[in-house]
Length: 500
Image (cartoon, rainbow, N blue to C red; front, side):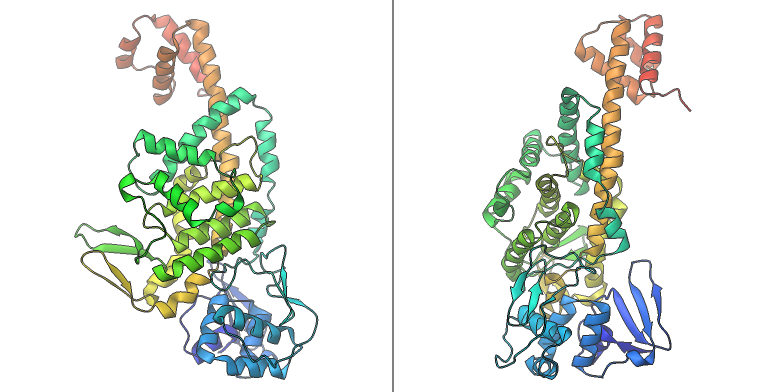
């Protein structure tokens, strides 16, 4: 079977090996073959075959495969303007030919022949039935295109609508949270929320495999989380404000004054002191422009489902990796900030999203690797010196992959992870607190002991399945054996430990 669409263009113009969510082949009948990663190979009968030209296969791709900005950027750099101008001139009112002109100018920063005149009704840059799009598009009068992209020519993520994503985004998590919290009095809510702030902070450091920081740095991150969603949205991705946040959460010796100016990477050291590289970050000279583009994404994604917007901004940020250190924690802070701004949570509740990520690290790693794996499979070429200094050798070949990421898998992951946080982690924590209060009351029915003694006793009971071990009983010599038996029974009843 011969290639069609993007695959044909990649081979014809010797483009980089971009992963394609849709691969089209010329066959004998219409059929689809799906892969486990969500990609699909489609077979088309011969009457679908386009002309063997840039215009023919690109129109086929835009119509049947969708918009792949990274491939388009590389294609236009390889083809130059002439073939695109000829394609537009041949069908100046055609939707897909006008898209070619629009995307050429957006992705290259160059203007096509100004004498080209187009017509026809305004058409969307992205089909809203196939993509998450900016709710408030702008009109490009030159090409008669409604620009509903989630970014600009410097940085523009794309999220494809999938059955899995649409289902996750439609989940009424806000209503579920409101119903859940309605059963808890304000004082109990405040206690569990204080604990969740601390749990979230510890979890976000654990994800980075960092030892628990000193108390002052821990409290600084808690304070940062409490500010999520409160400041002006325009400040969220401002370099100065982001730098201030980075300074709060890293060791003061590694605080920075702005975005990085060197090539960095994510890796781990092997026993022989060599590095296993997981991800090579965008070249430092691209970072300011990409962050400006991410700010455009923040603005243009206003009005999207909150979890879709959080995926665009937070995963866009972590893949740009603008700082030497602290990117992962800031990535997760951005999730919290946008959950607050989107009013998914009530009463300033912090959802322990990092705790869910930590509990399901295989899924979190897989979401990150869906973007990094194609690069690290031999596509990106680099040199790593003995001093840890890295140089990217083929930056031009990989640049558009970084600038125009497909964040579909990451959006699916985040939407499902937040749902698990609401339905599992928050329910568990609230349930634990209610059981703990019942246990405290049960102990006090037996003996009215001081709070510190009571908390120690409850902690020991909890760690041993509701029983006080023989070697721990000596720490409570004031209690009789009968009282300890009554306390153990009350504790197990409060936590339902005697149920099958």
